[in-house]
Image (cartoon, rainbow, N blue to C red; front, side, top):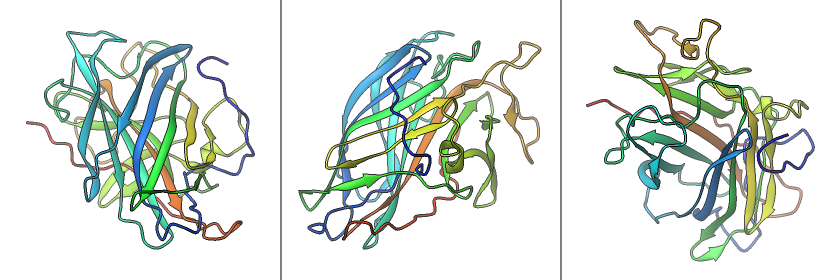
Length: 278
């Protein structure tokens, strides 16, 4: 196995649920994290992020975490941007989403010259988030982050970006999720907890500083004719393949006032459709 070390965990966890100690009334919000992405045995980047206390935390605020990104150069340059989305939590549950985008250094809504991942091999992709901390009113939240065996919660997706629009890659085990009226193709949480330790594995954690990860995700690979990877083109006329522009990762988040009290939080599709071309 290449990339960061993977600890095998019971196959019953993948959508990321946060459970907090009794001192916190709600889950709180993420305040800091370190994010690293690997393809095969190569570390593509490893960066620390302080999450701004914006409200709502709707994913529209993007952090440029890598300025000149050229792990797989196709042209001049691109930057890696991160956004975090977390709806206002109710008393005991919420969801959290992380979006990584290889985009124009000046505008995260425009395509950059270089993709996030290489398109010419089958090296698997791992994304880890370490030192993830949540706070509620300045107090640290003691949480548990995990996934559930569910086909109605989306755990990950990858998208391309061509000259006209963006499309979902048809990844192994991906299923259709509806986001409003939009058809999307995303990998459900169940794929991360099906007992297959070679594809789609999630590493959970609990405490006040969490280390979680989406491991061994198959990368989009070239089709047999040597063209770009297959994309999911339901109800889309003229869709064409392109570079890996975005990866989304998701987790459900629930507070646990008492030990052994766990709530399930349905995610549905995790993709957001704010991106527009200019």
